Image 1 (cartoon, rainbow over the protein chains, first blue to last red):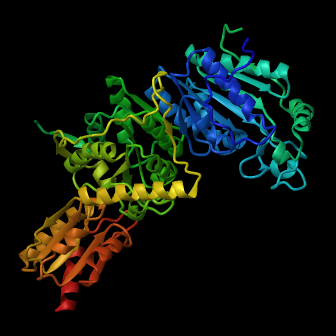
Image 2: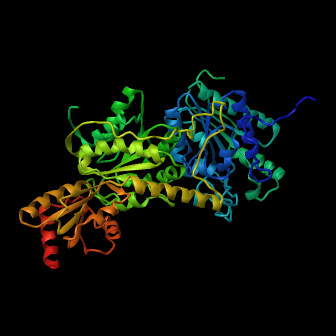
Image 3: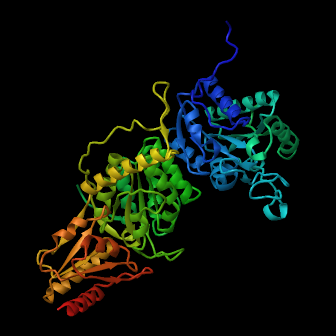
Length: 248
Length: 353
């Protein structure tokens, strides 16, 4: 019988702890498939963040290092500078990357560190139970914004990809989404391109992946996908923001 | 080997390179900046990497990554910068990675000033970060000793898989003294088979982590760390007993202050007062056993520090209530004078006659 689907070798066989309908599973699989297709599982060293995806250290089938909250780009820098021939990536959420870890991600990009960052933006702190993130949309409710995010109190949501795309060391910056099959395909292409940017030694690469959090949004998974499309994409437009010169 | 005249901060860097350290991550801060500057000049010559981080927090987390990748790594800073590094030091201790951190301390609290101080004693000996952990802390008094202990620190770090702090102060970092570089005693070092170097598709993934979500798992981990710390306490204590055989008063001081105290002891002895010194070289593990060797002739202990009194807690613990413990300290970047130590000693002995 023909095999129509199999687990990627880029992931371990461990069952994930993610909530039903959470898109971390899809994004993990895309990264795992890219590691496998580029034949870099054996060279890869991943850095897990603090947040829901801290347990990514047990799901990616390569060497893994669990960083302190927000510090994954610094940890990845330490690894890559010692092992320049290896492939080093971070996998970070929006609380991790866009709040406590802003200095580390900005300066990793600024130095043009030859690492790849997978930035999962679901506009909320998931692991700690649904607090407001810098990425939370105006009016979006969170446990620390019970009446919804107010601009006068918390400012507008931060657009990390746009910010990072202003930095010369950031060779590849793209925002994608995984709310439907067509976008999942595009997301995989972007993730592959990001790793290829690292392999070519062209500088820092990051893919921001718009993601859902059905549990903390209080929405059923299909509704969460719709909410992402209707609310997140207008504020966080999809597309490439930066690619290496001469790149396609 | 011939001696060379070197500034403390540069000698520390040279010692690290001699010990096989090729990677340095740090952030500028007075009075230790000559150390990263030295590394910036020297490391590229040997194929190493010097990287100036965006903050001390980032620097220690780069150390966390580089140590996890299995290389000998160094960071250095001063007092408030080392305070910022405590997050990473706690992670590194828990993840059981070897690295060396040099603290050339200055006056605090807060921004304080850039003069020498010993007011980081609590921070470096109590574990300034969160959780149940310890790490060895060496407190050299001379540039030569700083060189020797830095080289030893890398071996101890690898041997026990632990961060190690070399604790100096602005005086040690800025002074020039003749030094020579000799090999530290050989140790049997365990292989770094835990390092994240890529599986090469030949082994199961290595995971460097300080996360133990189960309570039982974390308790087991913490007791395992504790057993290691007990082993370090048993094997790695270092101290100097100076003119102690007939001492009627025991002074206790480490680092720069111990040099002042030695001068004071000369003066006191010339005047017929038998003073001796216990000089802790490791301030963790603390040389408690030195206090068991205090002769019967001793009537009192005087702790001298460049702080308002921090090591005195360890002196009291080690003394176990046997002798009265007195204190003399200067702080804020002030260095005690030998005359002031002499005067304080006489005052105490007047009181205990």
